[in-house]
Image (cartoon, rainbow, N blue to C red):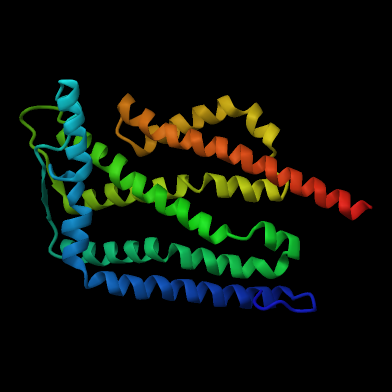
Length: 274
C-alpha cells in the first residue's frame, strides 16, 4: 500500500509497498543497533548486568520489604553469581547480538508505525478514526511489558536460577551467552505478552472474538495465563502469581475493548442498512 489511491491496487503493487515498509523497518533496526554498539559500557554494566547486583532497585526494595516483615526470605540477589566467557569470539558476538536486540526493541514504535502505514490505506475514514492512537498504545504496552520483565521477572529469575544447585559440589559459573539468552527471552516475552489488548482489538475488529466469547472462556484464559507465567518465570508460586496478575488485568481490559468494538461495528452496520 502506500499513499491513498483512487484505484484498487494489484497484488504486485501491494508487495512493492510492503517491501518498502520492510526495508525502512530493517534500516531503523540497523541504525539503532549501530548506535547501541557504541554504548557498550552503559548497556552491559548499567542495564544487562544490573539486575543480578544487590544494589539494583528491585533487589533493594525486596530486601526493605523483607526487613519490614521481619524475614529475609524475599531478599534477593545479595550474592551475585559470576559470569564467564568460554569462547574466543564469545564476548564480541554477544556484543553484536545485544546491539541488534536493543535496536529491535527501541525501534518497535517505528516498526509498528510502518505496519500501520501499510494497512491504513485499506481502512475507511471511520475505521481510521476509531483506530487512531493504535501505534501509541501498542508501543506503550510493549514498553510497559519490557519494563515489567526487566524490573520484576528478570531479578526473580536471576535470583532463583543463579542460586539453584543440585549439589554443593557443583558451583554456578554462568556462561555469558546463557545469561544474555535468558535475559532477552524474558524481556521480549513480557513485551509481547503485554500486547494482548491490541491483539484482542484486531481480532474483535475482524469478528473472530467477541466480549461474550472472552467472558465465557475466562477460566480457560486463566489456565493459559498461568501456563505462560510458568514459562517466562522461575518455577515458584510467588513469581507466577506476580506475573499472572497484570496479564489477568490486561485480559479484562481486552474484554472492555472488545465490547466497544462490537458497539461500533453494530452502529456502523445499522447506519449502512438505513
